[in-house]
Length: 421
Image (cartoon, rainbow, N blue to C red):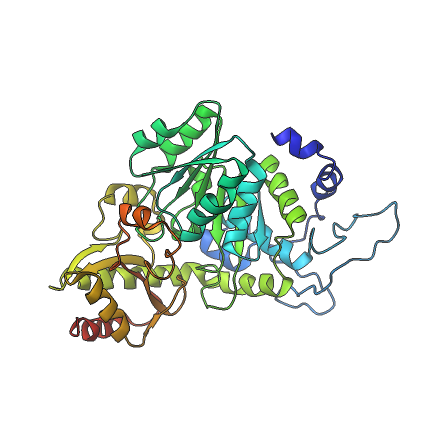
């Protein structure tokens, strides 16, 4: 299949063009030895292209095209047209690849565009995918509504059970295993090392959506995964400013194919957005640490409240706590948790209708603001009802994304809203 992509009449010239990457950038003078991750969030891939001004930030190259010195020197500088490559965007792509331990990354306008690139690049008619039965609602929908009609089959499986994953694999047909950990919104976790082994044994690629974790907490490529997907809209941005997505590949071959797919479909990121994400991601490690600490306090409060029947958070109460402790880095477990109330759906609706700032009732997650979401009618409303209930997303399911506010203020607001339930 990969050879078909390379030799297609549409893609052969574009593929050879894309392989000719931009020239290496000067990263400045560093002290001897490698940099720690916390330093990389700030300084990785920093470049000062404007030697005259010494600007500390990478400029926004707002240009759709780039003048070539001559036909013979076409692409010598690495840029021809911004759909293919843009200097500002490339700095972001290289920075994300380094942070995520990948060979390269491709950034897109949204997280779903990133998922679309992966599926359209590596799947064709007759292929089979083993995919988690609990994922972001848009991922579930695009599999059912778009790719199934192209003759691609999907087996939606409980990824908390490795045997069920193994049983779902169809020898010779399964070309992709698609995991998400922690899953949106149930926070179910995946044993990535074991699933990666299964993928290699059957000749499939292992794709992992790691949006909830971020590379601060988990780097799937370090656990045998071939591709990591990130919705940059979430923690990478973290300020409710932009949408974006990223596909990070472990190998050069996979990266070049994803880059070709991006170029053909036009799923690109604007340079202004890339510039913005380059700034917001500098503080992602600090935000995730604060958000994890706050989420632990909020989860502990909810666990002790008489009107709360269930709380799931990897750092406190979680049926897969051992996997969380094994895979999650830096002793952090993220900003996300969920809970249910004794009054069921009516109580949950009542709580969310009575919640006040600093909580915000809306979609999105991973932001500086704390967000509370009714998944059944918001983020996962497009799922088939039976499938949604099967994985535990009931009508009273309440998803929480903790921000960077004072935890006591968040708890007080929840306490007041719970009094009205």
